[in-house]
Length: 206
Image 1 (tube, rainbow, N blue to C red):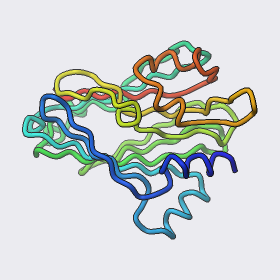
Image 2: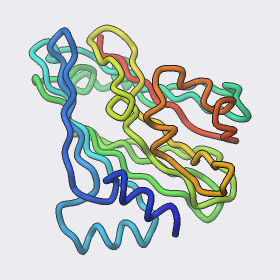
Image 3: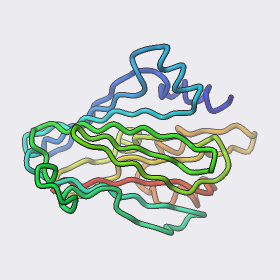
């Protein structure tokens, strides 16, 4: 129950939107959960994370997009793989953004087989991936670009999402926000906070 209370404090189970701008005109808007209170209740009960992202920018049109993930265990990157690369999908009409807006929905949960199951829904298609996890219901999906106020930009890979475990304080309390807002040294979270495992997602528009 601690997780639900702390995440409520961090507004991750309420329907609130946030915006973030880059120096070169790229804008990202985040929308958490659902604006329907009953659906929010069901998502929380089932342990489902639901995040909507909207990228907006004049230079976004005709750019490809490449999403990657780093799997970090005991403070070390054990895998760095592609989630999706529009250049290599093999379907020409999906290779580039055809507008100045790109919408992305991320739906995820921990399965009973200790897998983090994630579906990435783009406007015209979706892709589902599963990643190894530890046996706990304390994983939380975070928009770290927003939480840690990281730079977003065209033509440069930037940190976007993280699927994290909480930092456990000496008094036994646990915090996800303390991790998600801790700044740029994201790949060192395992060492800094004693986190066994987390996923780190990056994206690039080019």
